[in-house]
Image 1 (cartoon, rainbow, N blue to C red):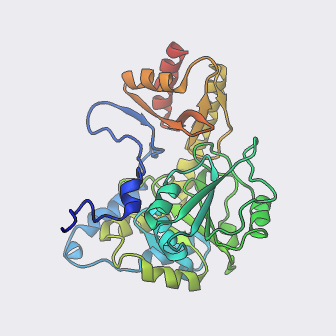
Image 2: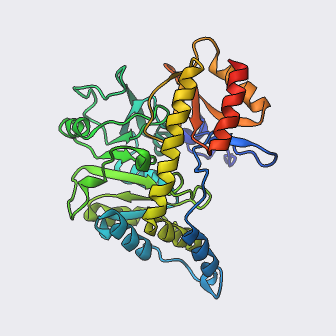
Image 3: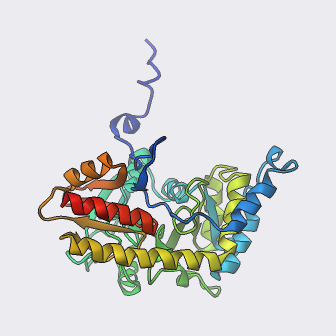
Length: 354
């Protein structure tokens, strides 16, 4: 007897729960502080580029599969070799390509915890094992690093949900103790005092390091879906074999190229968000919350007298969405740094709740 379509699915897919993205409401007046979107919108040059892209016959033709114009623009803006850049349909696409490229079935992916939950999902899809290593109490990576036989090590930096950063000295320590590539997921790197792109700047090549970046956060292009990875050019050459032929469309390529070319606008927006972040942190502390000083565009917090789930539900009743995140050892609220009026409304409601 032949199997049904469901029965024919790989056992790993049937067994996994899958990654659950943050809630995306489809209607209503919602203050949305749950998925770390940028409140200020993209560079005006992005809008101009998109308008130009929908004229003529641009949409009739396939996009450049290698994103040449973007890679050249990103190389100039960031001071890195364009040949060291891999384009992706969001940085999650880059993470998927890396997993498919480096991790065999029954291989091993390792990541600190608590961190980005997608890493586990990528391991499950690949039929690989997933192992976590707890951050220390002060959100450092342990030394010595206890797992040295992995195929890939994912490090979200700044980390989500904590917003903390593993510094360059700690990363050098890790590199000296592992034999697999270290993937530094810098989705929030533009909001941090330190990032690791310097390892590739000025024609340097960082052996054993791969950095992933997204245009969703600091560049305000979450709706476009574009990200990129930075690695040694010979590694990028191999990764290009694995990615979908046309994984980035015409509109995303045009938007990303215009956005990354406007570094002045990026700095202006990041400065505003970091100023609001500082105000949010101090206000939360004054309301009795425990926080971890953040280097991302969100703040992780808990309250000693009120359950995080209860605060989440009360805010939702007032049409304010934050992210309730639960880990085996941690539970708390991750609050996106929105616009100043949005944060004002959040704080008003939090005062009523706590």
